Length: 222
Image (tube, rainbow, N blue to C red; front, side, top):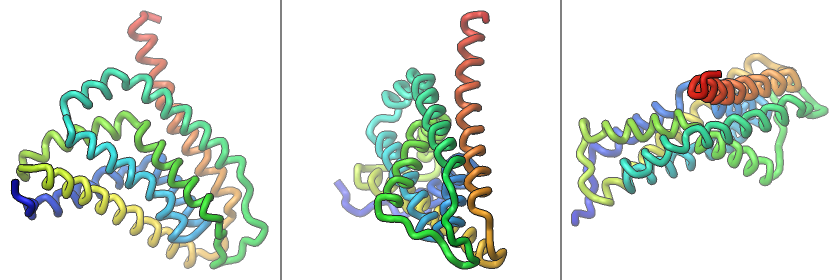
């Protein structure tokens, strides 16, 4: 077995990592809200859970695309239901949260380590309970062989690492851009921002649950 990975795997993995993170979704909403409220570190911490979520999904895909893909498809309704409830819960918590007492321009909230870890856990759960994102990544894995050959387990592990690096790059750049824009805009009403972000998460959750209800009614002729 060769211990030298196919060099083309790294750029392909980086592109895939950015591509699966860039579309607007719940994690993007949380990352932007945290970058405004807590600065670059807060935004990156919020996106870090998605990095590990993408890595876990990618690793599962390398272990057996067919079997795991079939399992995700079979349990898609249950996964989507859990994901919808997760988004509703996080959305309500965020919408009800209050802003720090001091809201001066350039001043950001500095939470405890537990606060950063909590945001990472939230984005991790949002990622692994989003059946669309999971199946999308599996579909991408199925088509990667068209562009680059994954010849060994070393290639597969490097591909997973590259995807995680691409995802981390996206969340870092997004946090930097948002924090810089916030600095130029000056004072922002973070209570209002929390409300808007919370409503956005709730809306994503409602869409997931509504889709399940629609499919259920269609199957049972309701």
